[in-house]
Image 1: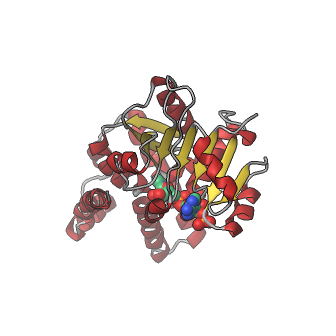
Image 2: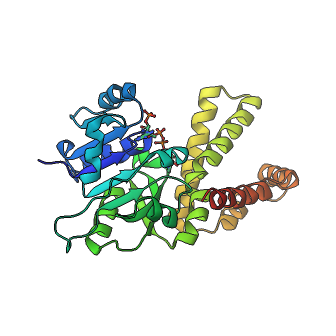
Length: 274
Ligand SMILES: NC(=O)c1ccc[n+]([C@@H]2O[C@H](COP(=O)([O-])OP(=O)(O)OC[C@H]3O[C@@H](n4cnc5c(N)ncnc54)[C@H](OP(=O)(O)O)[C@@H]3O)[C@@H](O)[C@H]2O)c1
């Protein structure tokens, strides 16, 4: 089979996306050309894939081939994006779609993408880290000139490992502040809860494992029963009991306000980066 998917920045996030594409047989390994920054990264990336894909370093002459492919995933770090120079692709058949560029680079908006890659139809995708376990969330915003067929392809790329949401671009910063940064907030809360349980006398492993299950079970209960979080809180907190005593303490310490402000400030930062 011939090459059809280019991955510019075959790092952690792109590797996860590729693995699930192979698993779901959306693309086969011999269709993919991946580009990484450093020559020493080529071997490291190849070791992640049991099937043989083509991976080259950015300074290898073969890397230029990526620009001839109809679909590219751009997954470099935001600060590396200015190193990526489009080699304009002129389709032999002008009635065909423009080549598609799917960017997962945080904080680079569609206007900037279109300016950097003018011969492409661009899409912004915001996946989050739980795509690693097939429980991710991905927000998508379409640039101009993305055809219906290309939209279907983009959805097929992200659906195997995440729930996909199409959003106007002005909502992507808030989406990112909640879902992409969210796993870090939840990890922090998880660690702190486990620390509390250790301080109260539980062994560390048990405390952490119970914390994971409490978070998982609570999210499932809220989702499956369609409960408002306030309803669940009231169900658990009995008069003059342990839970209401702890909740009172959390309110005094400003936990709720700290979390609200964290999401708002992350969205603001994402807007500033753009
Ligand atoms: N991690 C997340 O949860 C998450 C979620 C949503 C979006 N994102 C976005 O995904 C992007 C990638 O994140 P990541 O965590 O996967 O980062 P990463 O592991 O550092 O991957 C970046 C990749 O880009 C390569 N690269 C550097 N310079 C290059 C160049 N000139 N040409 C081609 N490739 C080049 C790097 O190769 P070398 O290692 O050899 O330098 C590396 O393979 C970021 O923009 C981030 O904002 C991440």
